[in-house]
Length: 172
Image (cartoon, helix red, strand yellow):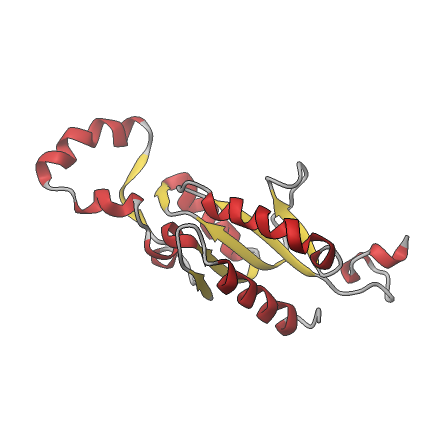
């Protein structure tokens, strides 16, 4: 069925798709839920325009390679998350911070402002679970091209940015 193949598959008649990934770090994943809700209304339109190459909540086989856009939800609170975010950035052309945790590091980064006494009281928890000394917003670690604020994300802003990239990458 060549009409469903992506341009990258080698078929010259195939329609170009925006290759995306959706990633989640320290957060409540409320923006992921909002994205799933958007799929209720937009799936049939988006399936011909978007290739979900990495999206763990939609598929079991994921590939972090040659993404046009990475949508990243959540703050960075562990070394593993920090390393993973850097890997995501290396494998995408554009990176979009999704939600307040990714954009501002909030609310998880509130612990960055604890007084010395409180920090000492929670130190054993931070060490036990391998947390960084400081919770980071995405832009403190990597270049962020766009922000979708909100908790959960502002879905109108998300659709605006998605449409922008559909045009920029010549999908529509």
